[in-house]
Length: 232
Image (cartoon, rainbow, N blue to C red; front, side, top):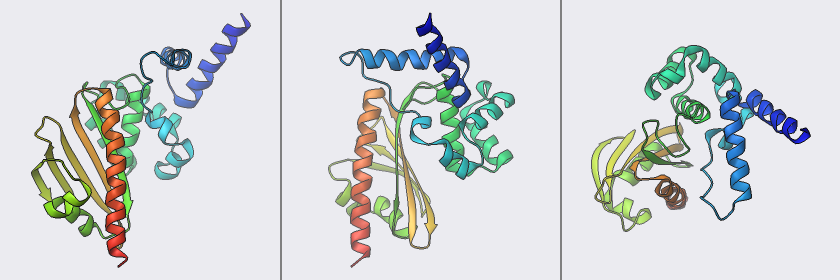
């Protein structure tokens, strides 16, 4: 009985922290416990947005922590809304910057069981990566759009460019398809810019995990290349 009460306390503590319902919070804790007991079983699920981004950082950038946003989104009826509608509502009604509006939306969808980590709400899978690089945004865009430069940090991959809008976006089919990349570039200051890569239409969670690690490595190589050349 004491053990059961302890587990219920953990469930309610998680509910207070995340804004999840009792059922979802209980399921999340049971899933984690099962993964801990069975290291040889199926691989653990990927990290959620709540795992990646602390309440303190989210509050600093958006004005509310996870529980605060979950409460507002529940009251608005976000469970029944599309991903695009929710992200737009956060941006338009609450002034949440675009990248953070997407982050809050994905975090909410994961917490409410609408998608798994690395999975799109519609059921497909995706991988993401981002870096801030100490070069102007035009230089960062050129590293994607210019094929000789791109091959220096992204070797051995066939990329078929779909659209390239300088210096903001770059879209391309990946290695003959069916997956593709969507790249967004934003200036941070005159001498710094941020790149965010979305690799979508992936087959499963394993491929999403593999490509997430791949983009972490390749964006690191891109950062090293451009900053080294800028320092010459």
